[in-house]
Length: 338
Image (cartoon, rainbow, N blue to C red; front, side, top):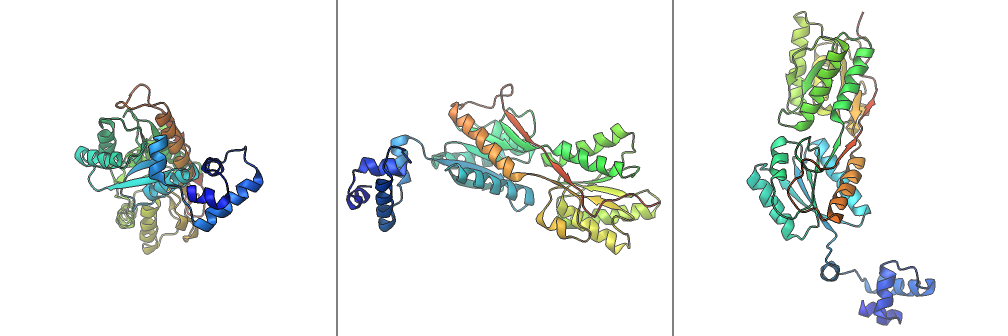
């Protein structure tokens, strides 16, 4: 900063005011300082700044299985929101969701002097381990379910599933079969709740659900199982699939069986992956606004940091922000066959 001040012919205090956007600096001076910054390639020293302000502008992220579309897009949404707000991220990707693994991740982030942490927490075991963390680390859980005592931001998985099933019933299907995601994931359980509740409220039969694992292969295998049940006389005309990846496998199984989508069987997925619109037929699915999840997560965490909340999870006072899901009707859903 002193080098910039000398080259621009101003004081280092003036350079500081320009860098921090102070309004009471003449435009001519701002331009002169900016030219000196560009010529010298000056960048602020974040370590020195942290020593003065006692703020690092670094936030931690604890994530699990970011190879899947939902966690990957959630992470991207958080990173984008943090960057727009002037924060950097330090991330730990977990293979071990035990309390020991979560404590180790939190300790690592604390050593990086993060101001707070956002955890992408799709499994109950991970949420429970986060809720039990000791020490002064403001924390927000994304998709953290209910009852943990942690501040939570989530997409309304139940509402998204209800909209999907209601859409199929309104098309005239007598019931809707369901392929669930990984049973350890909170989102899978929430979507199953929305599916079952909508059928029960409509007085429709509730078929036994099939258990998948989020992968296209499991969707394919369970799609073949539903084809076999249909061949044996069961009335299978509509399938709500727990995510789009499994729905792709279901579409393959139906195609191999010579069944038309949606002429014989309608299919609805969940996530709205980029490929969904370009499948044949295009996939009706439930959209999740991961960018909004990122913004809400960051806003909630900064609120936690600002209030100095540094104790254990607070079951009574924990904040919760819910982002609505959106059904996107495309070519894979239609009325049942006559």
